[in-house]
Image 1 (tube, rainbow, N blue to C red):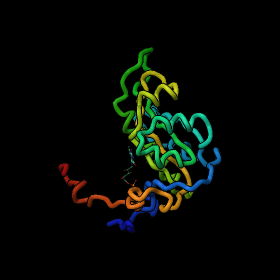
Image 2: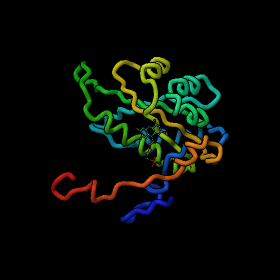
Image 3: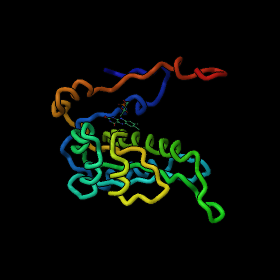
Image 4: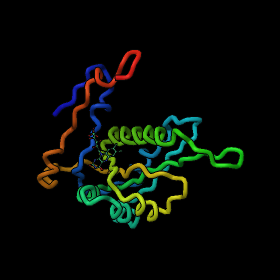
Length: 191
Ligand SMILES: Cc1cc2nc3c(=O)[nH]c(=O)nc-3n(C[C@H](O)[C@H](O)[C@H](O)COP(=O)(O)O)c2cc1C
């Protein structure tokens, strides 16, 4: 399936998608760091920068721990990625010696993940977010501080051959469509 935008936009927006087939190739830290760097420059409420990341590279202990927290469906393909990145956000901000809720921590961290994913695409890499994981297990295994909220685990790597996937997943290995803007955008009122 090819994706066609209804309005002129840069290729990266339709070119990025979330494959599940990853190539065997390892990922050097030097290739992963620009993804965090792109995320780092995302906008956030009061420039609080609530996003936090913890990662492992395939073969190391952190990778194995993150993979072990994935639900079985995600683990089958996610553990073949070259890197696994847990995404959390700090849900409070320090002010006047107290921690106050930051209502935008999730919104801002989603923005950062978007930049991460687009940077991956621009580097010829794939990044696939997963919400299917055991949050309690992941928080413990990554020594997550109190007040952080886990959002996703991202599988990162070089795209692999769809043939490497089990039959059921192979059938889903293509870029997905989107709702039309007419269902999403209203002039003067929400749709
Ligand atoms: C927060 C979040 C959670 C997701 N969770 C999963 C998941 O647990 N397993 C999975 O296979 N894909 C997961 N996805 C991938 C989405 O299904 C995918 O992004 C969506 O279908 C749009 O497809 P595209 O990214 O290829 O454009 C998740 C994506 C996001 C952003």
